[in-house]
Length: 186
Image 1 (spheres, one colour):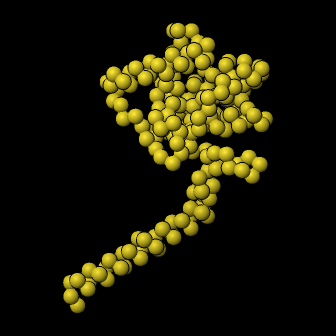
Image 2 (cartoon, rainbow, N blue to C red):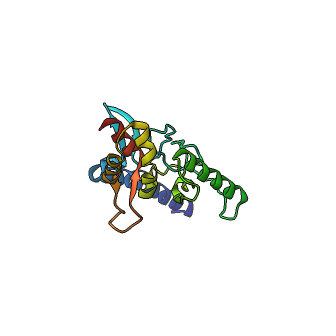
Image 3 (spheres, helix red, strand yellow):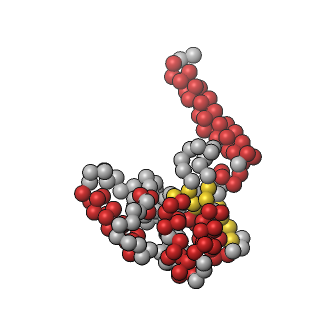
């Protein structure tokens, strides 16, 4: 048997193994073990898909909690960051601008410290979560806009706080879409 024929046979075997058998095997396992996650962790309302737990959405109305800024304007079909480094003058200016927007939007004093996740976009531009501190910082604005008690909103934020993954990876976080949905439909 010639080298060319052997190479072709090996190519066919590995193409079938890695291109058909392996993907079908893995897809079957994930559909059995974690079907919701494998299919996008969609959130449905009245049978209609309104978002995913895994992809951030843009909320601009002051009656909603706002998520992180997005370098891609929350376009769900792509992912990306600004690629600006920590010493970039443009990043420093953008961050300063975002800090001012957050302070004005939430009627905060000039000396209030703003959590980084409210002014810096994530690496993907699609992060659906904000820190617990970022959610609590927005409670007064949302309570005022909706005419509800601040204490009730704090309870709602705490109720929607997710623990670190596996109990120790990351920090407590709040999924903005889920929190805003609960505001509308509680």
